[in-house]
Image (cartoon, rainbow, N blue to C red; front, side, top):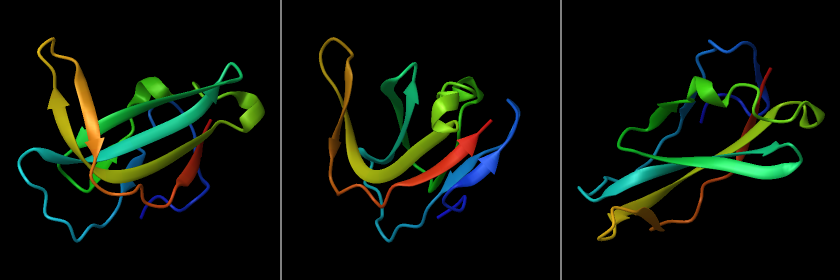
Length: 108
């Protein structure tokens, strides 16, 4: 997995690639669900993205969202999930595997 746990990145334009390995071959309705969590204004916040590849570049809009008091730490994990949409177009993810080990990075 990369980056190394606890890696430090600087600046809004940092290229932060989260990468992992998997022996699972995705079915057409499956994805790798990447969950990124941080503390923002003292409250837990986060985002999820469903990808077909074994890596994902963190969106620049997350820069400086994590509180300075937490040393701008972001935690992330990956699991296999099924993406589903209801009649109203609301997307949900049904986990198909446990989350992998959680890792973190600092983004100042």
